[in-house]
Amino acid sequence: MGLFTRNRALAIYLIAGTSFGGGLARNFLTPLRADQLGANRLTIGLIATVGLLVAAALSLPSGYLTDRLGRRTMVLLSIAFGLLSQLLSAATPSVWLLFVAAVIGGIGIGAAQTALFAAIVDTVEQQHVGRAMGWLTFSMQAGFLIGPATAGVLLAAVSVQQDLWIVSAFWLAALALGFLVRGGARPASWRFEVVTELIRRPGFQAVLLGTLAIGMVWGTIQGYLPIFGVQGLRLPGSQVGFLLAVQAAVNGVSRLVAGRLTDRLRRQWPLVVAGVAFTSLAVMVLPHVMGFGPAVVVLGLSVPFTALAFIALSVSYANLSTNENRGLVMGFYSSALFVGLGLGPAVYGPAMQASYVEGFTLCGSVGLAMAALVPAVRWAPRRTRSVVLPPAA
Picture 1 (spheres, rainbow, N blue to C red):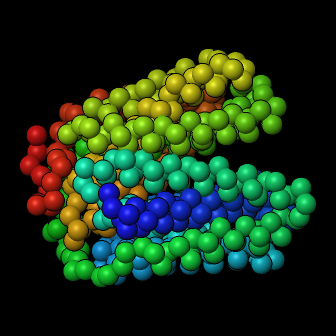
Picture 2 (picture 1 turned 90 degrees about the vertical axis):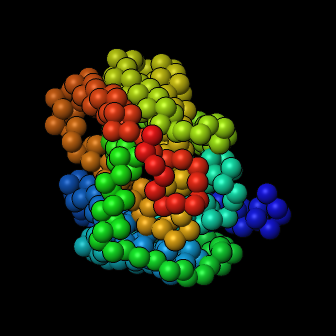
Picture 3 (picture 1 turned 180 degrees about the vertical axis):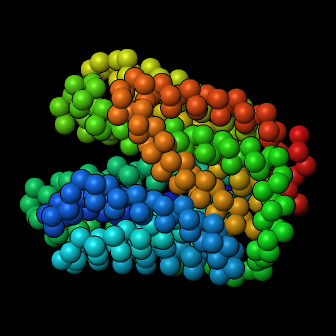
């Protein structure tokens, strides 16, 4: 990889870290701001849900625009939406404007993931896609950790509203770096028959199924782990926060190892199946442990498999794409991922209400079943740039 290519890739990694850091800092502070403005718990939950649903709904059209307008334009637009959402959250005197900010933020985060994934695949050599995806998602995980941590530290000295203004610096840094992304519009087609042909391919269906499977399991873990840590594991809030930090750190480091592993293999479906299966098993074990140490062991052993599934899936989408339709394919990835992340906590919510054992067991059982179905619907991605859709295996 040449120096120029490495510099462009580094810029994309830094954009991912700063933009996702800004987004997660906003997500951390928005419930606190909503509470100050008089919102109840249901309203606070709906604010978070709205952003996720918007991201899922608009990731696909964002993918088309990423192809049509160019990677740089879409990266800059996504950052601009994120910055606008941040500023509106800081300035608003009413709860309903926080919903508007959540919608704008959802547009930004959905477009950002799609455009950054397409941009990094354009930037690196084909044989290094897995490694690049590892570094890209590592950067996102770093943002997940650094953004809320920075916002939390600042709360010791400033108000929530002031904190929202200050952490806008994450978005400003990302905006400056966005101009380093390779630009240039390219021909793009989103005819209905092109999309339906893509969806009908057995390999593409397997990719979508794998994304939905890991998204639902991981979304359920992330949605319920904070409250389960307090009520189920009997941990104080400080230890729950540290548990989440350890999980994020292991997740980030695992992405780097998973990226190198996927580059060494021609097919990724065994990695996806293993990743979803082991994560699902960990979910089933989690409600049966008690205390900080056992929970760290369960998560520490399972999170690398979660990271492996995500990296293998991202490489599979890259292998299914060409320069002309890469944004569209990555839009499918982002859309399916956000749907899974949002669907998991909602689907298993009634079972969680009954008991954590019942809820986590149901989640893990469905995850195992979906993992078994991935090879059953056939896995198609091959490493090629010459055709849009490789022949099914």
